[in-house]
Image (cartoon, rainbow over all chains, first blue to last red):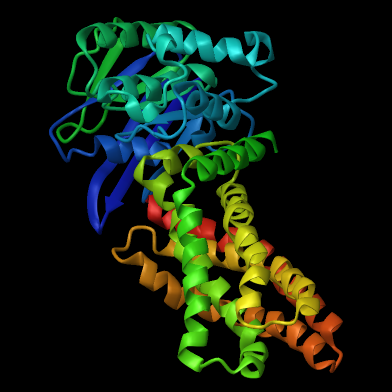
Length: 213
Length: 222
């Protein structure tokens, strides 16, 4: 699996944010997008996720069925958590499992309930499973959003400031989750100002030199 | 399909837990209809004659109140972005959400209409016809309304703009919905033809609404 971006250009409100960006990321690789505010980190992630049409250039993902858009193989964790305050922690996650998950591909991963419990346990939310998400703290809500990554399998993770409002221990836990995903042949693009403590990472500095091999 | 079922289930569950929105719509409907006899005087024959039109207009206005809710909350908490990355096309997402709106808002309003009909001296024998016309015509309100809701998502005071966008689109539904009832009241015949046209408008809205609203949502997400 390999994500190839060729001379990508993005415009926002008539202003060119990204111009001629090329990037190749192979399975097992994490690309950290860094750069000052307004450098286009979020714009790049949102373009890959399919929310913004690219002005120029192409995006390709190898080893996926022909004609399927890249976005369908991506998890997008944006600034917002996509958590419903009136649903319990478990119900929130169960919905995303049902909506994002691919039943055929995940048949071998144990029972559907097992996936939820395992994901909540991994991120330290299991004891809150029955609590309405509206009563969670900001950090717990963020962890619930990140748990989405574990309940449906998608090879590409697009993470926009994933560790916002997480405590130190949770950042370490999350780094472990990302490492496991990479080890399993996944691909991560993360915009972050915080060092995630990952081993196999490459940095793409945006706003300065815009080309990375 | 299982994804759409999951989305529909979630929206229904949220609607039940946030029951206040439906209460507001039903209360609004009651107040609008109850105001009429005060404004027009207690002429029972006159009230019975205008009843079906008033009940239909009231239903449209009350349903309009709740239209912004179809997408607002999902945009604010980021769910809409994640829904857009799903394997289900955005058109399917819109259809499931509009269908949930019909089930949780339009049907309760339609079921309340016969009760309000009593306030307006609507003949009891006509009430099943009124109910049938509303159940047959209201899908158009939810599915055309979804277009307005999607277009006005990021706008301030979107509620008023929705009324401007959606009410004109609902005129055919209103005309044929009322004409079903008045054809039965006046005994002029043609009720069946009007009802079939009403259903046709609803079916056309089922086809057009999701496509148009999804196009609008893509612009809003960008």
